[in-house]
Image 1 (spheres, rainbow, N blue to C red):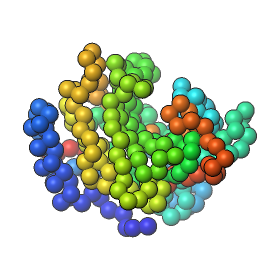
Image 2 (image 1 turned 135 degrees about the vertical axis):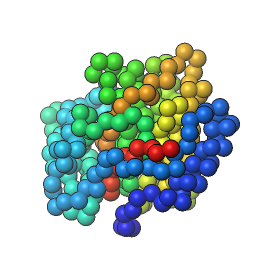
Image 3 (image 1 turned 45 degrees about the vertical axis):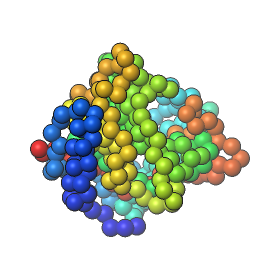
Image 4 (image 1 turned 180 degrees about the vertical axis):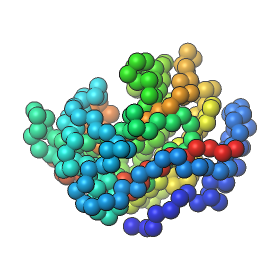
Length: 276
């Protein structure tokens, strides 16, 4: 595993310059921040088998979540715990548990850490296999009152295990959700995402969200990119979610080629506030 570090300042300045050009093309006028102040982080340091820090993360326990998923998400160390080497391991297992054939985990920062705008990033090594569906994403903190998709959803990284060299960056909101969401695919050149760690990030300002893989920009979305009648709802705090789903309407079920267990390793998650 390569040493951990904060984002390379030279890379972020170059990204900022590229975004300036993108802004001119898209009509966005947000100032481009050249400095980032670390607001929240988890480096996942601790002994093997320890649960994620309860001061930073809470578990979603249950199944389906509206996507016809096949796993039961638990709060057990068998499904989400530190590996003792500085990573969080979220592990999908094939086992009968509370009438489901698979288990996994889904953790979030709801009520513990929520932020509007900034740089959200995580260094992750992804699992692989038909029907494996990991994600690093954020959901509006008014989810409980506004409901989905009015609360807004930002998929920082979403991945189909049967396409190991492709990830997706997407937004969901009123008038553009589910199969009509706004986003794009990114194909990793010459490698697969299960081979090594990669940094997945967004930079989110008042009227723009930009997606990165390893500080390479692959998509910018502004209100002008929404369909007619779509409303930009990325104007309030969001909380962070990490999970590995099994099956569901986006990936389909596992088949005989899918090997279990499958593990998503998360080296760190960091959130920055922008300083103009």
